[in-house]
Length: 399
Image (cartoon, rainbow, N blue to C red):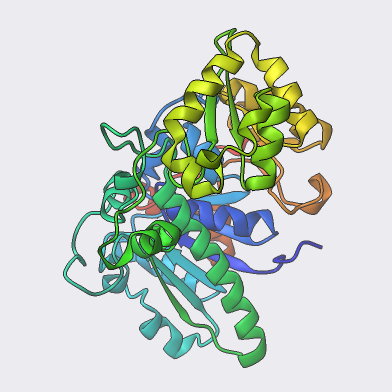
């Protein structure tokens, strides 16, 4: 039995933050019913077709869910939604600010008749304050939280290559929902959870904020190198490859100088005694490293680093990660079905193997509408009437 089996999660979700949170709940066995618009559904379905015909974001965040299409503004569809929510343990939503409350889905309203319900609201800026009505896309929150200011090369800021603000909010939603379930087991009552993308990313900015507090200079942008520890970043070798390495303390610096740079006289050079001095003299270290590594390839540099016990890593691209030998050796890849095929999927961190996690299909739009409406007491004629009014839609089950 998986940890969350028997729990019902209803989610009015789109894009990344809420779908990622609920997918993790589904991984642990919760039944997740995803409410989508009859026309088009979650707009993330249309981002691309790179995952064997499916949008890559959608494939990542939506396995093991059931898709119920409802036009929640249609009176009959709204009534069906409220019947479903009355059965739910958890309601998650990342609609526009105020939209859920206008639909009668606020915790204050729902908890009057359903005191055990947990309501998780995800928004860009939270439910109050001067930014309440502002749109909050991932890149905008990367900027507002200060993340862009410390990321990229010195000459220009750069966004993260992934939707890091959405991911941070999704993971805080997930962890807060798990905590609320534990609390409910003790108290018998649910709670409201208010997740803000800005607050989630600001929490992740803790070290740079403290580093630059009280008017001090913030960490400089240094590309792929570490801003405040050195040497810690990528170094080119004679065959054109790059190896990322990290020296964390004086002991490691001495070993690095002797065994990797093959410059033993630098081990006790006062210019490099202590991390602060190494950061101040990074140009000299770069020059020495460039000379030392010009005559060797990436494989030889990694061999020296491993032999010396210095942390290192290859700068892999996505194709390299699919074939990463460590993931393969640990059996971390499984498979999930998608409409018309299947996809590889990483077994979630912390779960042992495929028997320890739920890996059900990614749903087609409206695939479960008919069955869920029947569960709610709707006969075939009533469901057909909803479909005729474009308040729901039906898709064929996957083969």
